[in-house]
Length: 355
Image (tube, rainbow, N blue to C red; front, side, top):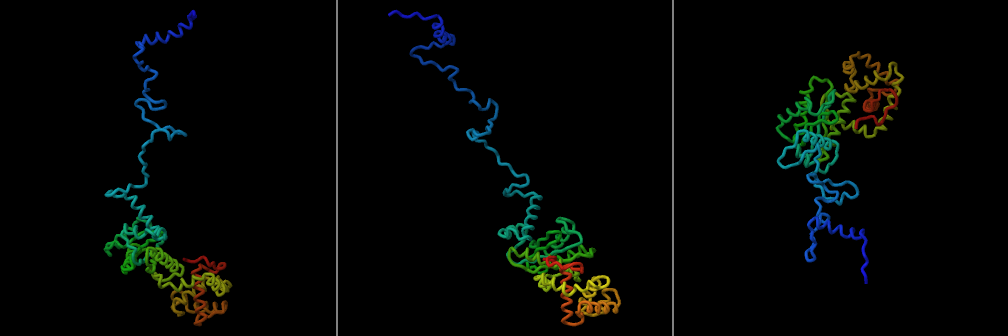
């Protein structure tokens, strides 16, 4: 069979790759394996990988998890100090922890770990604690001159770290264990030394309360004692919550107290000049032990003025101030008017009272 002659195009197409291999020195012997050319060599970098001298960057998108993991150091919160053993915390961080602890202690939040946190600030809550609060004309600032002076003097006098002096809602507060019975009185003396020239400062003393929740209950009693003393204009600078329990009893049923004030004192609105002078005369009369001369001396008026006003009260209300039973009703109504901030204008509001 005769072999078909190939065309020059077919001959050139088959022979050109052989000539290229010969030019590169590839002999391609039958018994010798052919060495891998450039097309079969391992590339210097994978497609999509980093170039030489370039750091690997993890691609973003759906296929980001397929890339190699990126080890990143955890970022540290700028306002949170690292808790390392032997490393002191920054002063700003300690002040923040102290403020948070005081708020939780006097608001009753997070009672579970209060005892453990209190030990960091030198306060033990295992037994009963008592709280004293001082109020001035201007709010007391945490870290201010008044709070620093009282705290320093109190620690020097008592020589104990079991006393906490801080501020809360503009009040200067002292938290101490019940076993240190002299702490509240010493706190009042130091407040008097720091605010002696101020005419309106007062100190309220709460009753001892047990457990981690004791400070918040004693603090509320001290604050209520300050409110009651201010509304009733009680004499003296130091007011104990135990001495003001009778007023707390009156406030337990503020709706009934408001009805009593409205029923007994409402006729005083018809008096010339309003009910104010008559209410002040009744309050001073009962505070003076129902002695007209002492009442006149307190009001800086004559005795005849006092007796005239008391007679006018009897005519308007039907209650005589010098009668034991009727006088008790008048005195209770006058106290209720002050506790509810009633001055003869409008009806007394049951919810407008301290505590």
